[in-house]
Structure formats: structure tokens, C-alpha cells
Image (cartoon, rainbow, N blue to C red; front, side, top):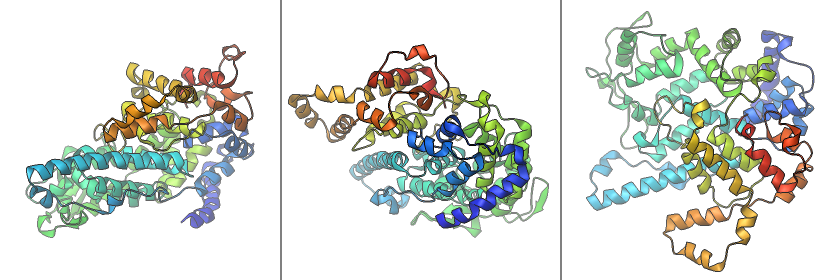
Length: 486
């Protein structure tokens, strides 16, 4: 897969140069500031060595390099139980005691699954892959709270990663038949004579057309078309139930006939509003909170013409003048994942178990595999409130004092940890095993000069860091409000 990406990337960028015009693909090198901007918007806070490498590249070459390195599979081995599916029928036969044990196990597995994804983001060689997987997780939203199956949520995560920078049309079809989605939006119980409109509504409003692009009658008719899409309760796989499908004539978006779910998805993909909705969301993810309508339509048109190739849309955004415009720098608030994963990666922080970070993400409002509702995490200003801002500041403050705190631990306190329950003891040990050496990091980073330009999306007054050295300089810079932006 990676080899094919390498072969196709030059063709993609040639297409971009022709379709979008030479003005959108600057021939000048990015320079350190442009490279930092590109890498931090598409990854998790770049190292100085990465910035130096990309600074020498022109926009199109930098984007080609990013896209040629994307992956379709996670490198972190998943929990062994993700291959299992526990039938709801079996659960219903359990005794009260067995059911309580089963529920405890599901809670533990949920934490383990979240921990797995946290580790993948911390260690991935393709941050853009994980950024896009998270983006689609928030677009095609499902949640453990309702699905109640770690294995089904894991399968969905694998599906989203596989198509993260592939074909949107194919991903839409596969997500629509994904068992976790079927459960989350009640498609599994959608049957002839008793149509459930949840999925039909959300596939139009949130996944494709957006609000106002359809009528209530379209939703009712589409719900009939999706009847019969269900799950095999023994395997957890997608299953068509012909006897549950409404074979009558339906009219959706002006098209009439014995439509089924695949027909409806095809009608949605044929509408220009679908490409515009996706590009608008990608704009807000990578460029700025306020999309430019003309640019959105231009890129969306190329996106549709490419057959919904996601790389085409992403590349067009990343080589555009709007992406590099000064007024769009530092306009995006870091999500909890951006903030926590980015900080850990950028400062080469050591750890043995990512559990404290997984739980911190939940505290900061981004509980992996558990978006708050069908619309996902709202993002933007919603990431910051008095509670989460304080928690963010406490995280970096403690992180850059871990060496000092570790020196203060005595044997009695370590023994006290072992007296805790298993889960709390694990968390305490993992928290104590987070390691950071400011002196070593500064040495690798090439010293203190220009550090704020590397770490912050916006310039700060030179006097704010004057006469501050070593780890104190890192603490001062990461305490700056601009550290919350990208």
C-alpha cells in the first residue's frame, strides 16, 4: 500500500498543479516557520530536526512527502480480545453474578482499547494518519457508551484508519454497514413496517449533505431503503435480512424506484453538497475556523472530480495560500489530543504506560471512543473552559518537574502505592514513571535560541523570555497562552 502511495503521489500533485493553478503551489522553500506550521497542523508538534528537513522543501514537495508516508494500519498490537465478539444472546443467559463480572470486564476492556489508541498516537511514524483517523472518528461518530462492544469499536477504528486518506465514497459505504454504526444509530433494528429514521437522518445531515440539503420526506423514504441492514448476532458481522427489507417504491432526493441502502448512498455522493460538507470540515480541521466559500467550492469540485479521493482534498488545502496566510496562523485551539500527545512527542517524554495520558484526555474533554453525542466533539472554543485550562496548565507544569518530583520520593511512599488497589496502583506507578530531562532535550534541540518560535504558533515579546534559561525557559514558553494554539 505504501509503495502504491509513493507511485501515485507525483501524479496527484501534478493534477493539483494543473487543476488549481501555479499560484496555489508556491515554488519557494517553506522555511522554518512554514515547516513548523505545516507539521504541527498535520501532526503532533514537530521536532526541530523535522522542521529543519521540511524547511528546505517547496509546498508541493512537502505535501508529497507527508502523503507518501501515510499508513493504513496501526503499528501498535491491539488487545488480544479485539478478535472476539460476545453475542448479546449469550449475555442474556448469564446469572446476576456473571453479568456483573462481565460488565466489569467490559469497563476494563474499554480502558485498554483507549490506551491502545493513545499509544499508537504517541509512537506512530505517520502522525497524519492518526490525525485523519481521529477526524473521521468525529465525523462518523460512534461511542462505546451505546455500542457496548470494544471489539466492534476496534473494528470501526481499523476501518477508519484504512480509508483515512483513501476514498470517501468507499468509506461512506463501509461505515454505513459497519456493525458499530448499525448499533449506534439503530440501523440494526430498522425493518419493514417499522422503519427507524436515525441513520437516514444522520447520514444526510452529518455525513453528507448537511442541514437543509434534504426534506423530512427524504428521511422517511431513505429509512425504508435502509431496512434489512442488520448484524449477525453470533459473529457481529454485517448481515442483510431480505425479509426485513421494504421492497416497495421509494422517492429520495427526486429519484424513485425500489431503492435500497446502496442506492441512497450513491444519490448522496452524487450531490455537490457532500463534497462541500467534507471540505468545509477539513478546512476547519487544518486551515481556520472560518472557511472561505469560494475556496471550499473550488476544492470540493476537484474532490468530486477525483472520485472522492481524500488525498486530493487534503493536498489542495495544504498547498493553498489560505493555509499559509498569516491571518490563519495560531487560529486553531489545540484539541486535548493535540495538546497532550503533541507535548509528549515534541519533548521526547519517556513513559512505561500511557494510562495517565489516556485518562487525562478524558479529563480535558476528549474521551477516545466516546464522543459526547452523534455530532461528535464540537472542538474550537469548546475545548477551553476554566476547568480544562487549569488541567492543561497543571499537566505541563508537572511534566517539566518530573525529575524534581522523582528525587523527592522515598521508600515509604513507594510502598504506599503497592497497598492501593490494582487499578490505582497501576495508575500511580505509570504516573511516577513519566520521564523528562530538560537538559538533554535542550541539547538535542540545539539550545535555547529561537525556542519560542519552535514551540509557539504566534510570536511572543522577546522580553517575556529574556534572561530565562534551561528548563525554566521551557516552563515559561509552555505556560504562554499561545501554547494552546496551533
